Length: 274
Image (cartoon, rainbow, N blue to C red):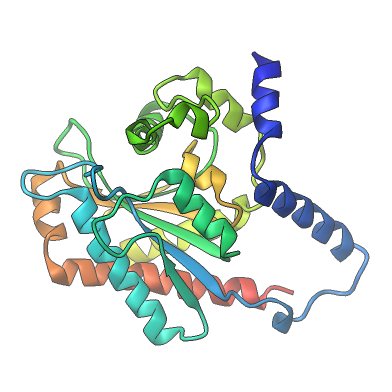
């Protein structure tokens, strides 16, 4: 099995391999050179991903479909960035009720050489009492509810034609398939954590949402994007009160502005690091 997994990993995208090699080379060079000035790096592109779409409605509440809610929030986030950070190009994976595959979402981000990837989703759980936000980064801590989120978000793969070929045998419902995630290391883990922490801090301190914190899980989309990436769960549609709040345009604005401020602060932080 290890040989099979190793073969699959060797076939991973050239973009990811180049990104990791570049990161390692950069670290080596930096250890023998003067610190870079703030002008040497600028965050120029961000991909805003509205989860699900089209034939994939995502999760749902009593009257709300995840795909519709997160599209509204994603477009608001993009608008804030375009208005207040005009030097940043915003790239959307979808701006309507279309169905871009996970593979195509990652390819769009990688091909555009984006500097950050923000995927926006809504949560669900059989226990209706649970509510709050949480932000995920790529990790292999697949236990309990983290693993359930990973399986649900990755399960969209099953809606695609020829998914066995496209995803090299990865089965989002199989525990064994997640072993391959543990055999790769992300060059963007710390940066992703910084952005995720910024988002949850904004939610709890500025937006007035209950934050369930930053979590790690084996999410295919995070793994396939060669840049700092986060998946934001803006609330639980299975909680009646939270669903009602999330349907409010005002609350959507607050959430979008929180994600924008977190991204703005993240941009300032990484550009100011020497």
